[in-house]
Image (cartoon, rainbow, N blue to C red):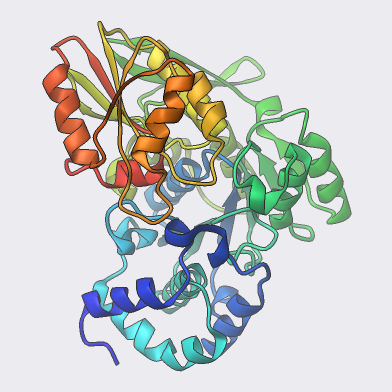
Length: 431
């Protein structure tokens, strides 16, 4: 029995395989453990309505935006996301409020016998905890973000009102497959019989996979990027978005606090998802949508998505960490005005390091660092590989030391970008 939150978390971290710490060995390639845990809890996954959100990039932002809209419409809204940045309790929220530490202690104590018999992973436990919490608190709806892949992800034991898949990109190829078609097939695994599905972005490499899967499950399929389009404009460094449907404005001058240009793609999936849910009887007005989107950070606590930490010099962090994510980040950096550019940069093992280093700007100065997790790419090794691509800089292993050094070097009109990995962003003291 555990009596403190710290002891409970230590038990979870030290005794259960955790992907963010050890990588692929933590993944259980089927749903048996999750189903066993849920059964022991009285099948909470059957006791609340849900929206299931998967994809390679943008699924976290999309999940938070949908949750904020439902919250604004007056629904008691659960939100399950992963990984957390600062605190374990960030993963499980209702109406933006994190699950209490007491609940975490109580849940782990209740399920200890099951942990010893089932031997689940860390992620399987957190999914079961979220579902138990949402069921016991009787949420009206829960937005559930897929952890990794889809078909065999622990979250894939729910039957949602709607499935949303943001996009397909190169990530976790060792687990999901070595082609975009294979990755898309894994992501498409969240499409359920007669449950509608929204794909935020039509991509030639993946569209047929989704069309075939939706056809086989008799699911209504919507490619949001075919039905809606978005534009953006910037004034004094602040971006606003306009969304159109067949040339008619749907939302204008949307002051989305998520300022990344890549949110243009995510917004389309979110708005199409809302349209589908409205046809199912969910009462969500245009005002709810605007309020939910414009207050997504304050209502749901989302962090690390093109988050501006300082203005002079401009300091920005972003959790983009795979090839497509970094391409979007670099596109955003090109839109900024600055004199000199600095990167505080680190990665984790298992990513396509060389492809990402190849993309990085050669006129920037780099501080290579590493997160305090076993999967972190060694900062010195990363620096050595970066030299091959003519990137200049130095090794400062500690993330916050690296930020401090970058700040000392940067002038008033310079820019510092912090990223390369979710876990680098997670260690920023000022976040």
